[in-house]
Length: 56
Figure 1 (cartoon, helix red, strand yellow):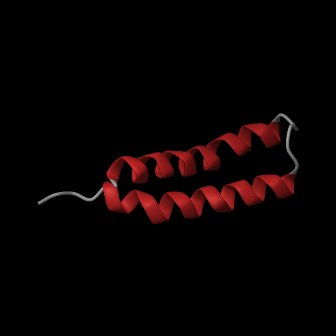
Figure 2 (cartoon, rainbow, N blue to C red):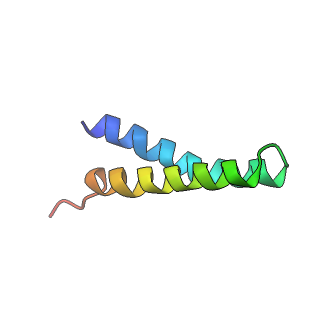
């Protein structure tokens, strides 16, 4: 389960970083940027805490 969570987390992280550059280069429109950022942020915050837990 952890490799799948990591993959989904990094996809979400990519969806929060890459669209900013695409909008800056005028490759995508603002609405597409907002949609990708929202999906990426939600994906990151719902998957990353499960595999980034600190083991005590």
